[in-house]
Length: 330
Ligand code: NAP
Ligand code: G4F
Image 1 (cartoon, rainbow, N blue to C red):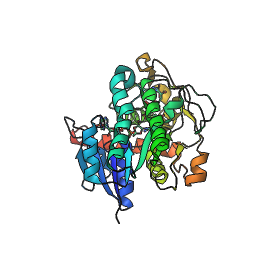
Image 2: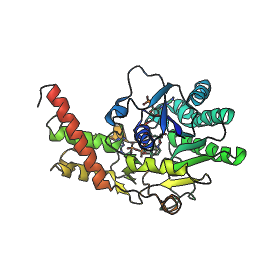
Image 3: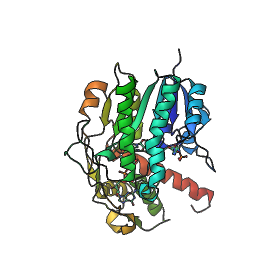
């Protein structure tokens, strides 16, 4: 029988890649979408799946809409990807972040418990929970130390997911994913901010790129690889939590170097440090240990950082050139 999945956050980066992945596996895919004043379907259009998913109106902060969405989609699997996911914004809107990114998780777990507690549930946890790192390479056993309202909200989401598994014997998994990027990454995140600027600088539309702490280090992978791990977690005999990462960490500075050099430029000629982008508390370094995922799920990252950043620069070059043609700037 065809399986069905409900994805919250389907209009986001991961939601779009996961929807495509599940459609290719033959799933019926439903996506929860909150009301917005303009269309948020551009990522589904980019992946050419806009007409293949069924959108259900609802909001992760509204329990009744979640119950309705589950009744309508009758899913075997629910993937909770909805969040206020931009760390910097979480200091500006800490309460909204707590309500969406933290309490949203228990809303969805309750909706599942009240409708069909046999549904397999995936929670999008994050390496940001490690924050001020307590171990050089972070694994499922590393203690957490959140450094932002976003990370604190995610920590609640993580533990309530574990708690529903232990309290109610529900099949709930928490994927502790390290940073993952793609050509459809939100423009506010540093990789995409850089690759978009590289394209605009190369094409003569911009001269400088203003960044904050370029000494920060992240373990960056490709979102297209990471959604497979989400699915694998929900196919196991018993539910568990997994770190998903590449096992390599790189500075923002070196990531810039890769991006600028790909089009024959030097980041030193264009990057300007602007304290406006410093954070009240920084996560200086993240480096994941994905051994458990490799052993138990048979998952490992396939795309190198160089391949990822070049893929993003190429996609931004293509997009900016098309926009210039439309505006007759080319
Ligand atoms: P994203 O692009 O920011 O997507 C977040 C999604 O959540 C969007 O579709 C957004 O819709 C939706 N959303 C926001 N508020 C909502 C609400 N009140 N009700 C329902 N939906 C709402 O994030 P992403 O990069 O795809 O990440 C997916 C999930 O993984 C997030 O939970 C994120 O925190 C987590 N995560 C991401 C990474 C990463 O490196 N990408 C790493 C670890 C964990 P609108 O755009 O319309 O607001
Ligand atoms: O790209 P970022 O904004 O991602 P961040 O904060 O690591 O969070 C992302 O990954 C998490 C997983 O670890 C997710 F949970 C979360 O939802 C999100 O997807 O920033 C990366 C680093 C930071 O250290 C930041 O201070 O880049 C540094 N940075 C330096 N200049 C900048 C900038 N970040 C942004 N966004 N913009 C800058 O101009």
